[in-house]
Image (cartoon, rainbow, N blue to C red; front, side):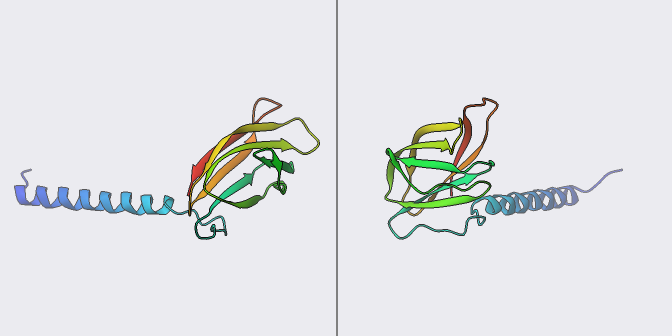
Length: 129
């Protein structure tokens, strides 16, 4: 069966156009995370601790204890942009995490906290929104 070249080109164009539209739609879905009902004030950044554990977690920024991140919930901290030393510690337990984290102006720095296979450590996954 022979197809005219014009038919083949139009079909290929339609297929590629549809594929491009689907890719753009998926990309736009991931560019903005609406699951956190918090935006930082102008000129500030927000650090969000998303606690996926059954523990209340003590949060220390640059050695100073802040409000706790409640179990199975998230907590936002509005901060000046810059680098911070972060320590997460299980309240009354053995799990912990420590690392440096950057807070970006007018952005959310999101830390997903989960249990690790190591019984003394949290796994923490960082992303910016």
